[in-house]
Length: 342
Length: 227
Image 1: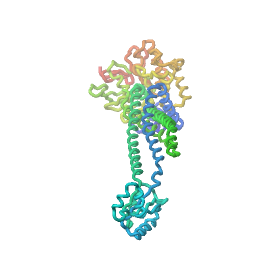
Image 2 (image 1 turned 120 degrees about the vertical axis):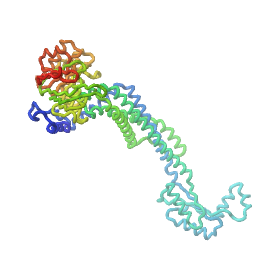
Image 3 (image 1 turned 45 degrees about the vertical axis):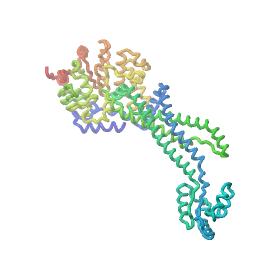
Image 4 (image 1 turned 30 degrees about the vertical axis):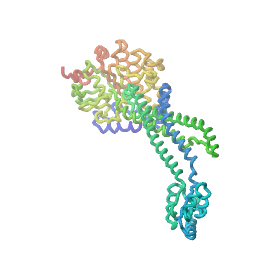
């Protein structure tokens, strides 16, 4: 290590040296051969990585169970997320058929109704679907059984004119956009009330938002669980190998050298757990694909259950690796420094 | 190579283990460090390997001042020396070869050079045919020789040994000491702590003798302190 072998030379000439500092007999502690080339660095990491993998392999039952616990902890939030994605996909477009009913003030003159309707139709953000005059509305009501007598009892027509519209093709259809559209329509003279017939979709989306938030919190909890599992496994490993750590420290191993196999251990646990979680999800998707397709076709929909795509799979593996590394890093930081030969 | 200047070491809540110790082991020399148990031999070796830090005084090892050596440089210091322990400190879950290779793995040697050096070191201590065995299957003397091979495999300039013959019979002890003498002949500075006076006399090498934390005999300076 060039960095390590350069410094003592400076130290040797700088500090009080009892003898001359040149000449082979009196030279300070010698430089080891400088071996920290990039390939040597790679070799050290390969040794540590393979070494810790081999160590896990030699104790397959215990380490397999640890990986399985990690896999379940990762698969739970991931599967909920997958479910949520599918529900969102299935319900996407449900608000595309948003209809807005604009009720004009009751008892308006027909010329005023005409004016208000033209103003509404003149807006670029809307497309008028239907105009219902008070008389038409009354006729419709009359045709409904049971209302006949009630309506006869009234003098005159209490029903307002209605203009049914939908947002123009290029208008955003989010709940908030519809809300503001409704507000501008409400300001038109002669308009009494604007009714967005979208509340149930809004409620559904609000519910999905809530569930998504819940899944997020759930994922954070389980991620903390994975950290603790990996951290504890690595902690036990460190305690079991206490003597080995002391001996390697005595022989001159750097902290990084001692840390490395434990960090790789955490990384392997995270990676194996994430791979197993991915398999669990793939299996779940396969088992549910048939029933989902049958349900969808019963509703006349071509909806198909979709599993994790490439990016999501990578994110799952990345999360596993990151949690494994972080967990072991926490354990190593806490416990390795405490072990000193003495 | 080793230079103590009025070094004292006190463990918390105990008497001073070493008091105002000044001594030197010149480069290329071999010396015995003797004294009764509790005289401070182990403490002295621990100070040199920076397992413990001196409470007062200056300690130079190969011109490196250990009292100002930062913690992160300690591994580097230890890689410059070889240490032989009384209880071997071998790793019992790996083969003799892997035990001896450990210092080279730590130093980042490539596998070709690594196995060449391990074989040379094992050959030197006469255990070349046991490289694939586990340490637990070896006798006490053989285990100690594995420990010595591990201590010299990276060709240190300084070799420390703490009671290396403590558990061995006289014939085996002589063999081990002969090994140290051979290493000394090729220029390694050797300091061997032992309570076996007969053994030190048989070799006729310089002796540093500790008594109650002070130097009672120093063959390098012909001084005799205290009693």
